Length: 381
Image 1 (cartoon, rainbow, N blue to C red):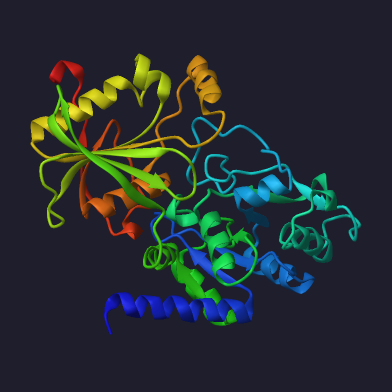
Image 2: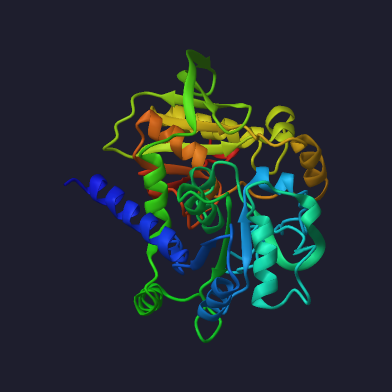
């Protein structure tokens, strides 16, 4: 049996155990802390299950929901994401897209008991979302995940939602951080002990991502052409379409790609005002030009330009540019970019970047970042 077949069997066994137990541990093997959450499907959850979740974790219950479900429930964001978030904060708006708290309209008293919380969670997990069954604020915090789940954002809320959906439940899942006696994230060896003592299945986020990649991809090629450029010479241009939203993504390739050798790579998200009209804050037109020139000087490399799909993006860009531009998303959010790189045959990356970061979330896509190279300054080009 090959490694992939063995991993698929492991995932199948995990899903079977999850359906029977309705509780599982999902841990982020890409993060330094090895953060983990206890998860359960929101659909038809019982008060005893909620009580078990809270007793085992010591954490705060959230309910991960897909954007479609969030829209159906008319959920609104609790606050604007922080400009300088802490990756260690379990309530970081940068990490959790938290919505205003909710409560079941009927069948609850104080909203705090396990039975009351279960009643609210069940409403969030119903097959047919009905916003009339909820009031705001309440004691349960929904968290809106990204369309495409872990194949777009390799993170625990997306993973919790994916697991429940794949297991045959609705696209809503309860998740609570696993904490130790000091209130810090429970270390991996502690997670293993908890699972063994309570007969709880455990799976790594990377295994879930590889499982989904084995049978599906969210991007596909739709066009190809040669593109002459002043900065990098002749490039091969490929247009990719995503199955989860409108908009097309661009890949520019210089030279040949060898999957056994590191490929100089830049992945950049569209920022219309700076990219088209100029600007000094990244990602900007200057950054794009310098990255392209670096790839041209290198003689080979790839630039992936990801379009922003969300409605109202231009309005947000105007607002952000009036204050300070938020840094480009880390590779964890570049699931679509990682899938494009996979399609191109890239397996090892020398990342062109404007800042050294502890990049996470790309290894599950079968891509290794072997080194980082700073994008040359204009005076160096």
